[in-house]
Length: 179
Ligand SMILES: Cc1cc2nc3c(=O)[nH]c(=O)nc-3n(C[C@H](O)[C@H](O)[C@H](O)COP(=O)(O)O)c2cc1C
Image (cartoon, rainbow, N blue to C red; front, side, top):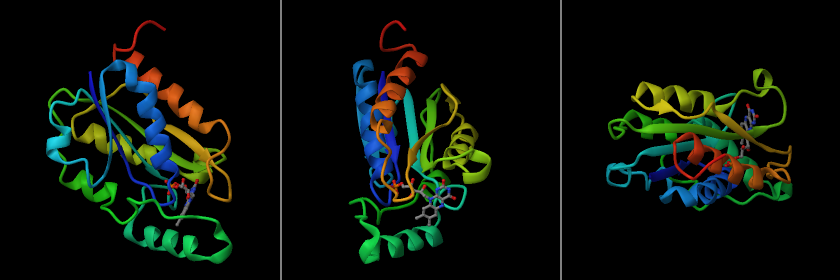
């Protein structure tokens, strides 16, 4: 199986989660992690599974406005946040506008967000999943969230859970052995 894990990330959490999901998928075949900028038509060509994630901003996917707010937040001295090296790249929203997925491609969506019921926090993965389906992909799993605290750092155990979720995606896609 050929897999592409695509991420958008401002503070690095979704990036880290993407890397761990890829690690969980590693036994299933050739797995590559790509920022939105790297997820070109060439990178997508021949992929059987595309896994896409981003941060939850104002109840949904990031926008130009919310990314500005994230930059402002990281700029505060006491924030303890560093911008992800890929934070200045294109947004998932733009990527979806020009996207052509390989025929028969399967997909899964994830996000990072604050704790709490999704009805209160919102979740970017819902919009990501809808867009993947609109582009003809069939989802191999429901959208999944990984949690950050109020300090915008990933909670203990969430990186390991991301790896497990990656392995479960491999199984749901018919690769990666029994279980
Ligand atoms: C401008 C902004 C708006 C946010 N809005 C929400 C929100 O509506 N719901 C939520 O659960 N988290 C919200 N958050 C927290 C983000 O989900 C969290 O910063 C993100 O998961 C970190 O991912 P990243 O490190 O990959 O950027 C917001 C963060 C920022 C900067």
